[in-house]
Image (cartoon, rainbow, N blue to C red; front, side):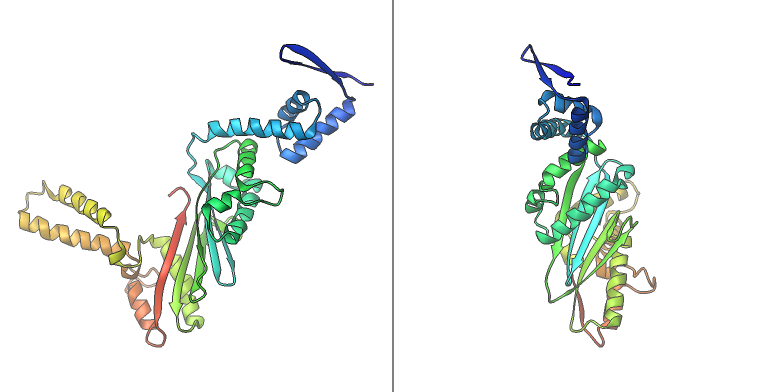
Length: 304
């Protein structure tokens, strides 16, 4: 039996014939190719006279329309992914709206593949979005497809890459959902003349310390001057109505600002493994036999 599939185009009724089984096969194939629901695939097949390629294009255009509405929403959840090979490391953050979506298998698989591509393009954000994935589509196109499937805003927020062979990279991922994929990720780069077991152990613990203590920079002289000025203004404003003299207020302000500097610079922070020591004390102890320098670090926390 060859039922007629009818639709209107430009006000005119168009009729084309297709068997029920053939029509359903096309819908099934379109669903497999795009991951889109039955209703949308049915509409696409009908609108495109049963042509699969045209139907895919139709759905992509429709997907872009859906995606544009969702892009106005806030995406504060997601995943941090780290990829490591031959002492080179990449880190990338991809956001969605809810923890439920972040744990979605398709979102996880997409994020894992994205992490590998981030490594391939050496953390180049613009090239990453253009990179072709396993299915032959670009990262940007697959983000749009994922938005249509999951129904949430999805964005690639930021990425970084460490590739200097003179140094050694150490990483840590917190709240792990899959190997090297979680809610918080750290990569820290250390310079040393030799990397023995003791130094490697310190490197791994340092990555954990950064995850827990959230330093802004490695040393005080790297802190942003405008940020320090703003912090000083906030401290002065808090002390303005304390009833203390200007000289006392100035001394207290200096002390509070110095405390802020110490708490937010990596080498001056209290070592999480031993609260009696600072990070710089641990480095000094290890440096008696082997000089150590922290060259760089990055800490990504989802939505932060």
